[in-house]
Amino acid sequence: MSVARFRSAVSAPRRLVDTPAVRPTVDALIADLRPEDPVHCIRPTTLAATARDFIAAFPGDVLYAVKCNPDPAVLRALWDGGVRHFDCASPAEIGLVRTMFADAHIHFMHPIKARGAIREAWARHDVRDFVLDSHAELTKIMAETMATGVAGEMGLVVRLALPKGEAVLDLSGKFGADRDDAVALLRAARPHAARLGIAFHVGSQCLEPLAWRRAMDLAREVIQQAGVAIDIVDVGGGFPVAYPDVELPDLGAIVAEIEDGFDRLALPNARLWAEPGRALVAAGGSVVVQVQARRGDALYINDGVYGSLADAGTLAFRYPVRCIRPAGAASETLRGYSFFGPTCDSADAMRGPFYLPADIEEGDWIEIAQLGAYGACLRTGFNGFDRARIVEVSDEAPETGQTLLAA
Ligand SMILES: Cc1ncc(COP(=O)(O)O)c(C=O)c1O
Image 1: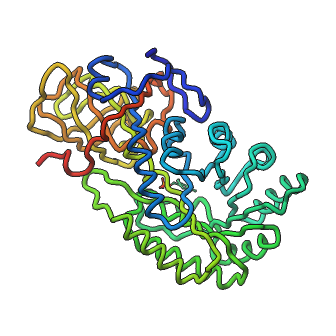
Image 2: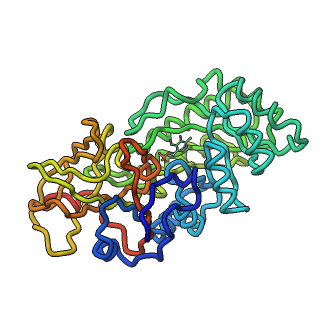
Image 3: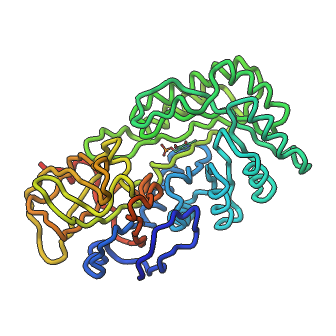
């Protein structure tokens, strides 16, 4: 396998590294390659199984939020797991999905789109569902699609703003129509729409099932006030995953709130949609980094906040970690470490703590798990540290949560 500069899967669907055969285990891979660049490990079996489980648990259409990890191997694994709907936000994401899956249902779920992007999605990639949160966007969508003569196929989904909630990543404030605007928009969009929907997003990594109930209640008020027929209720993403120290609600508890809220909407002919990103792909990806120096309880590693560990920096996410030392056994006593990334920016720091062997040292490798979501796709080339490899592995994903922490 050659080393190459990393490029996002969206801008370069063809990998710039040789596509390797699927490796049996991460440990064997590291022992074999002894890599000095970060290695992104994709576990197709885990991804497919996670998709199957989510689809089985959710009583509606499951749209994968492509932004979360657009690697073709990830998309292929999700397809194998039964995902047929894709939430795309850009022409590049749409083009990638359409190139890979001619039969995919692609939904353009960015509330503010370039005119050319609307035209390309509609005319070239047969995208028929568009989200919007303003009258200006409605006008734009209609203007850019009307000329094609297939306007009768249009799906329009009004994104409702939610108040700031308890999610780890708040998504309120940037997109969404407030209650009165949403009412007016539903009324304005209805005559143009073969399918009319309402959507919201409770925020990413939302640990509170009641957030979906509150959002459904608000959607009910808006729908009732609008007094128009609704065909789609899209409950967005935000479904959480296990990170160390996180008390994870059961997916069943979240689905129960959604189903209950949906029943109270009393829309027997409407379909439920969800747009999970993190929940579908976090477990199916990890990055293996190498320790380049140890200074006390600080480890200097070869990936960081300008690479795939952005959320470990600003958001202080703690991921499950384990030491890989092909040459021998590391200490079983664990100790809490912080990380510094490879760039010269002092903001390239991750406070953790990440619990690793007390005798970890320069040259050891660390597998950082639960990083299939918002990891590799966030990499930048800052300071020249954009080299990485992507491999597929067939072993089980490392354990998550407390089990990898110090006793
Ligand atoms: C419109 C939309 N849908 C879905 C998602 C995926 O969210 P998550 O990864 O929290 O499931 C996002 C994430 O930002 C989003 O903006």
